[in-house]
Structures are given as C-alpha cells and as structure tokens.
Image 1 (cartoon, one colour):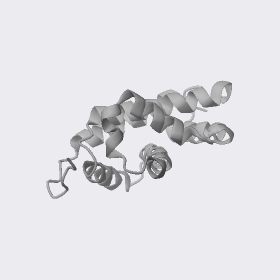
Image 2: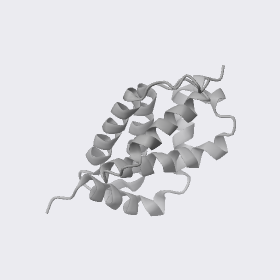
Image 3: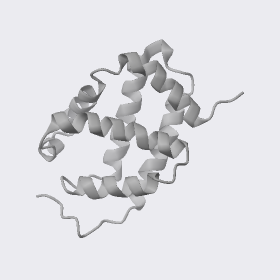
Image 4: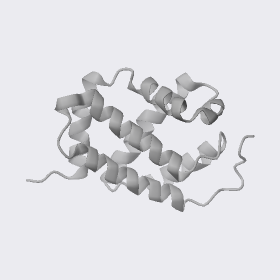
Length: 143
C-alpha cells in the first residue's frame, strides 16, 4: 500500500519528535545567516522561531490533507509578514527547503523513504499559493 503525502509527513514527524528540541532555533539561525538583511525584521527572534517553525509544519500538513483553512492561513502569513519585510515567494521556498532538509538530517536513518519528496510537493504548492496572494495595500511594509 502506497502512503499519501499526509501519511508520510505524519510518519516523518513522529520519527523527528525525539530529535525536535532546538530545531526551531537552528532553522532560524541558519535562515538569518543566509539572509542577514532580514535579521532586523524579527524584533523578538526567540518568540518568532518556534512559531514560524510550527506554523510552517502545520500549514504544510494542512495542505497535504486538503484542509479548507490553508488558503486563508497563507493570506494571513503574507499580510503578517508584510508588517516586517517584503518577503518574496522565493524567500518562502528557501525557508521551506531549509525546514525539510533540517528535519531529514536530524532524523537520519529513521526518516521515512519518500518523506522529503512529500514535504517538497507541499512546499511547492504553498509557494504557488504565496505567489498568487495579492498584496494587501492596507498592510504597510515596515521600513
């Protein structure tokens, strides 16, 4: 029996669980190291790290499960992030790829076969959704 993306993703999270501690801070540090121009956008990095990571995982799982709240959540992400900086779809793609790579590396041999591809398919879908969201001019970009 072939597993769905959602099933593979859930299995990968179960495998990751004992190795999750500290992942959010690692992800954030790695992202900012590669994109230092965004460091100032995060007024409280410690508060943002865990939230960004968990919301990323939740929305990717939601997309894989065809949840009806995903489109609204993506629009909210875009509006919220425009309060801080003008993040592009490519910025999201880089973040999603970093999340997937970090989960797989931390999980090691316990990472389920096909899990990275399942996560990446959802990441690609989210990047397409991000690109399709029209800029809400009522939400100012912080300068």
